Length: 613
Image 1: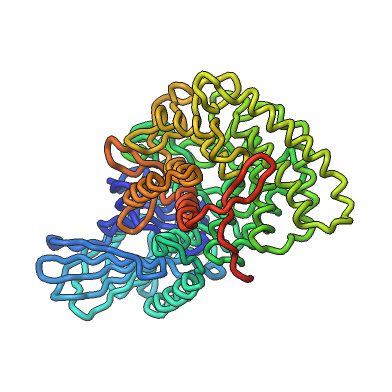
Image 2: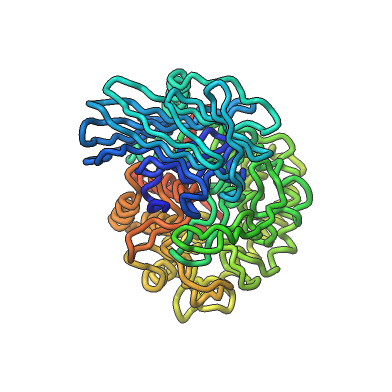
């Protein structure tokens, strides 16, 4: 059975990823891409659906684990009857047709017997492999995929699985290398496990040492930056939302989604987080991916894309998988890619503006698609949409969506004002853009504010509240000092807090088209940290931030949500949006004074000056 979500570590090679439990079991493995069909899927099923266990068979008295500093190399120490052993798990940086998981047993004390159990099931746990041996290698094939296992350990296999036992003495090293390759091609040459380990440590350390973040919680922020880096698909620069699918938003519930894709709305926080850490090249790569993905007509822009910019993300269910702790269905693909979400256009133009403001030079021809998006907003902003939370209960006039339409027009005007020559012909559009921004702004104030609750609500003519409205001060829509913003914060505190953490909305009030409930959405709680800070409630901001940091697992990882009643992390894991929000909140709190950046209607924090590229 799968472990609790918080008991997993995350390893990756900037192409694919695996989750490793504290018990030494890889229960989720996707190679060669994040969105490849998992060849180990016990995470959303049972052991029979694929896992790779390496665990002492002697009684374990104590377990401890950590990432090597500045890396994504996971070390797990087991102190056992008779000795101690260390399990090192990592994925070396991928090369052409080379994608591997390397697991190394190092003897620390005495002699420790260790069990090895490899169950490979391609196609999300559905297909048993054809297992053969040649020259000491064990090859497991289910076309179009194959993996080859290389190890000095003496293992056995039958027509289904591979297993064995090994005794590890002090000073001994026993490696296991599992390498993916196309089934119709020969396996790639063997890797030297120790050399690959040294190379991976060198490259991760060099990358992490480039971080220029110097604020409070430096180690915490840098660990989140490493986590984000590991969710970059290196060939394109796209960043996935999470490396997993169908980890539930409520145990036993149906709110189970595939997050192995690239959401546009993460753009602003992604650029902000990378630039705050000094990672200019990653920000450039993300922006380039971003521009390729949204190329074309504005009305064809999607809310998410595949890691290479793929547009067809067809959603289907796998009924043979019972789901994480019986949370059905297990879904692959994401039908939300077909939704119309007005806020995405604001995210796109905001990202372009932030890229310029944070020091990146203008992308060639970027102004043309930005202008097209702004022109599209002129008519589209009055349309109902599916909203930031991708609800499946019908389109509405969501307040956050309208606010982001305002952001799109406001930021495009800013691009022209701040980064074009005074004689540039594009400046002729400024009066029209400002008039449109004012019109959208007035519309939100008139239809999105509920005087009875003294708060902005989720949608026009709806009393339901929504945590996304906590972003108003950060986006510059209204200053935090505005009574309407303060009233919204107070209403959210009164109605959307669960054990001090923030729900996205109340499912029973929103009618989101799905049964059941969900946990507290961690990014929303970080947004409340920011809102407190902007409002001068610094002590409350710091207290909530520390509370949120305490929810990370022992490796510093966060999922999408947290369930206060059970005290468990839930939702897909690790979640990029949670780590992006963590970095942003840390940077807000690191500013002794929240220096405002003037907006037409409000103020927003000015992040620390970006490093020189």
